[in-house]
Image (cartoon, rainbow, N blue to C red):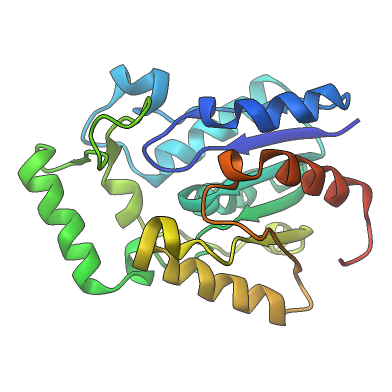
Length: 235
């Protein structure tokens, strides 16, 4: 039996993992799907000071108070930096880091540092114009259950210097058609995938779909997560 903690993407919540989580649980595994502060059903807790460290703390508190061990910690898209930050603080609770078409930061970087400066400027302008300077409304605004995304997590730089975290097994799951869904925002993810594919420190797999495999290929994704748990050798 494995324990999975599945971390959400932007503008969403733990709810977006419902189908994948059901498939994993049906196979007998324990699955947690935390929602970050200020998003999803916790949108009522949103405030201007939410940053990347807030969301890292959300997951750390789950690991601590659920007393989770040997966790397969999955970071999807913008929660790649979240699981990296969690590993820095709680490597002893983690058995495997899985980056699902996700940002992967180097020491001292933020997600904004990996994006084209024009995109970052556009995000800041959107927050000023439509989100009181600190929120990014979803486009389109009436998308199912989407909530505003705090801007600061995108701008927060992360310190990555824990050898125990660096030694953890890690896999990158790349969705090569991701740009069809998120356009140029996918460029840093594609670069992270290429680095992982070329590195002996990483396992690398692909899902032949776009950036939202949680919805476009949930069964394929669940089967791959199960396979990663069962397979000890590089894939």
